Length: 98
Image 1: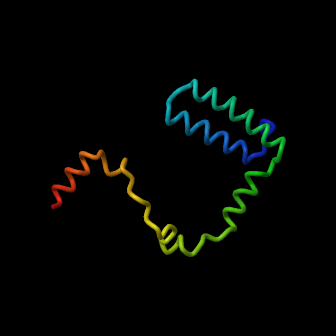
Image 2: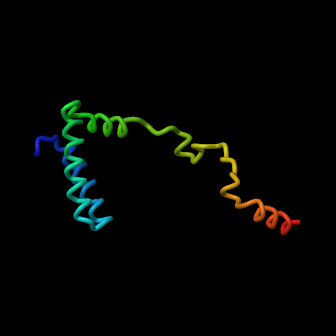
Image 3: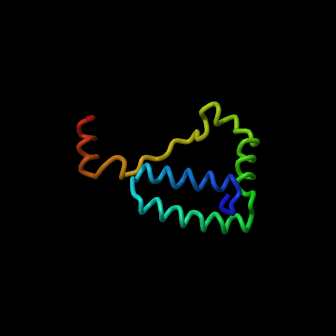
């Protein structure tokens, strides 16, 4: 199909049609189809089965047990000043708590 392996055609169709549905832009449809085809054609010339290898390894590799217990990241992330707000907002929040 179009000189591409079937997996590549499916990825190109999903990307192009999904983007078109999201943007409703025919310019995006044509541009993404042309650029995506050229990129996937070059990738297929380099390794025609790269997506099959990636998908198979993702299917066959077991998830770490910590992910299944919900303990993927036991250390909480620090709260940055951008999340908390400006210094005046932090001062107002601190005085309201006292």
